[in-house]
Length: 351
Image (cartoon, rainbow, N blue to C red; front, side, top):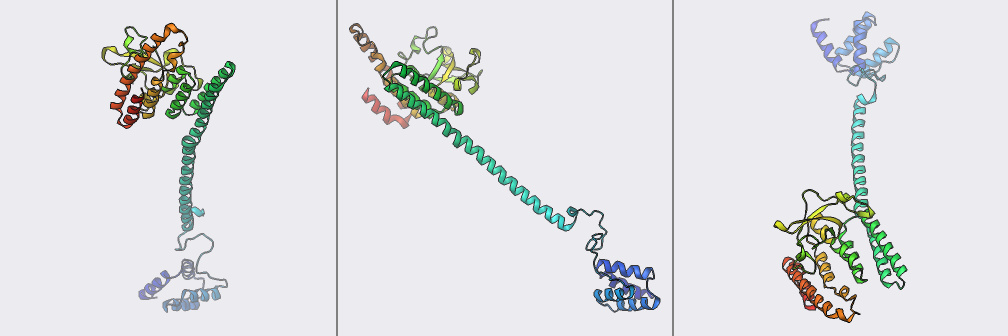
């Protein structure tokens, strides 16, 4: 064959499907057909016959079916030998892998979103609900103690109230709403120490108990105490007796009251609403101020010995001193908290 014939045959064979191409090359180079039949095959190729016709001619002459494409999987669609038979390395396998990856990412995103939602629901819905249930239960016990006719019944109700409050704070500690509500409930039944503990807190030493601290006493003060957390003890709930936890004496948090040379370190034995609002949450809680104003305006605890005629004048004098202190405190709060000015003004008129 001339060079021109070889060039034409080569161009035509390159157009054939992979398996037919390999078969044609093998038949010609290895003389698998007689010379005359090879010449017929070459003429068919030169005449640009369809690949199907070439395959039919070869099938007739070779005695077995000649296929256009390889179905064994040993070659790719383009006739390239496959060195790995794993589906993942095929084109279809790659497409499936990409789809699987997309589905996996989508499922993972849904799972993360669902888990985050469940955690958020538990943390911000279920736990507060559980805590509120115990706090409300404690308030009901306080009311029951107030209505009790027997001292034993009252004592039991107060113990139950304390236990319920401990359960609530073990779930959601330092809840301003229920510290205030519990404090008010105690105040209504005359449990003033418990009421003040929930509304303000308990510190050691108490205000006025330190040396030269006469003017720090609650009956002498003309303003709400300024407090700040000691830099030595940052806020840490583990250092509070929450839920009945026992805190070693040397591990209590410390607040600082006063200013300048009159600063005093005091251990936080219980964090009431005022201490929580100012030191943990760093806010001015209007309801806490109003409730403290209500508490200090309540003069019922000053008449516990009113049956003694010799104490009436002294008791009246003390009431006047307390009211003077209350007025000063409320005036300070009225300037400091415009949002509650109207309520405080009304309260001043009542006093």
